[in-house]
Amino acid sequence: MKINVCKGRLADAKSQALIIPLCEGGTTLSGVASEVDKKSGGVIGEILKSGDFEGKTAQLAVVYSRGTPAANRIVLVGLGKKEELNLEKIRNAYARAMQHLRAMNVQDAAASPEPDWTTEPREKIFTAAAEAALLGLYRFTSYKTIGRDDLREMRKLDFFVPSEDYPLIRGEVEKSRVVAEAVCFARDLVSAPANEMTPSILADHARKIAVRKQVTCEVLEAGKMKALGMNALMGVAAGSQQPPKLIILQYSGGKKTEAPVALVGKGLTFDSGGISIKPAEKMDEMKTDMAGGAAVLAVIRAAADLKLPINLVGLVPATENMPGGKALKPGDILKSYSGQTIEVINTDAEGRLILADALTYAAKYKPAAVIDVATLTGACVVALGEEVIGMLGTDEKMKKDLSRASQATGEKVWELPLWDHYSDLIKSDIADFKNTGGRMGGAITGAAFLGKFVGKYPWVHLDIAGPSWFTKDKPYIPKGASGIPVRLLLEYLQNRLQE
Ligand code: BES
Ligand code: MN
Ligand code: ZN
Image: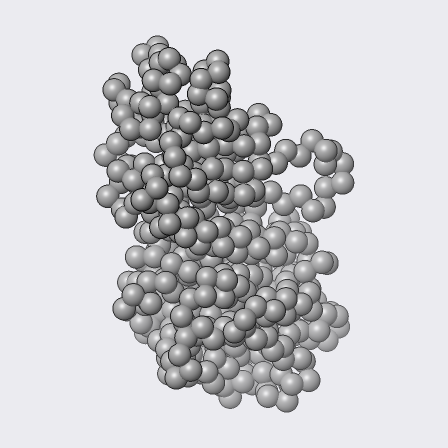
């Protein structure tokens, strides 16, 4: 779908439908709503008076204006209480309106978000609306062959703005399109089945991103990784017929001398658990175990498209975790790339093994900051629920800034502690560490394990096991792959530039 920014008034829009968000309890219409109401001979006022539409959160009504304004359909969508209004509610409202219009088989819509809805800078209202419209309409349909003709598509959404706002809003809306497309790219990678999203195919996607200016892609093959001594990563790959890859995607938008931010993403294209095999129920969901890697690729793609003046290194260790004849066995000991040894208690705790070597490798870039993103533990989902990212790390400023980015984007992050005593739980009797710390505090012992392989750089770990995949529809995240935390990381990186 295309999003256009147009100079002019919504009431004059030539479109199939006008979207008018309204707050709860407002009996007197103002701004754009009042203009459209006047032009329609009072149909909005009428439905409000009747009580059929109250502006409650997510409430929706379509009224028809019989010729004026030309748009004819007016979609009212509830924003909830005025005092509680924020960007997230605005996102939800636009996503809901757009989904409803698509279901009605309407193809063109127009809207005019109003800057005074919140105290945020005026462009934020537009970018929230634009992002949510694109993200809420996302579907993963490439494998459906039946009923394709019935798939309805929105063609365009026009935003009407006063001429003085036009250049600013146009530029900002274009940026939100780039961001939304990156999120949908990550969703596509995660939704793809494991037979069609192998480590090699994931690497091909990374190479395609590198057609952009200032982006380069290098892929370390099995032979090279073995020679380097990445035995933790190679150990996980041993049970699979698919060759592992270490994908290195670099974007150099910043000064040559500037230290990069490194993003490390878990790229398990399928996690069967290995010899410590998972139960059959829901094992299919483990095609999503590369969601961290997908997010890292998507962030670099968007950073390059936005031409952010920043240097980034994306590292995605990619492999399957399979119970083949050569697979890791519980009790095996691996010498990691760092030189430290790991006793593999449970082959299903494989993410931390591949990330260990990738985090050690990251030091090579002398990064200013490292963020790893991983569907690491079921325990994190137990602790925080399906919608929340677990955040652990050693750098207070990074954690604070990520929390701020979380507020701004609605991608929920919550910190878990990483106190020293948790490390006691991953000590091995015969090796340096063991790869599981038992059932209790599993998200934390997972992070504590990663911490042992972190170099001399500020580091934060994001556990996205819960929110990488939603089992229920959210207003602008249809159920399935969410693309989290692409928006969070892009917000964080953009804020870094302001410092
Ligand atoms: N990929 C899983 C974690 C996961 C679980 C992601 C649910 C998404 C949804 C990870 O590799 C894993 O299996 N972790 C184990 C660790 C345990 C063996 C210490 C877990 O969480 O059970
Ligand atoms: Mn696992
Ligand atoms: Zn896993």
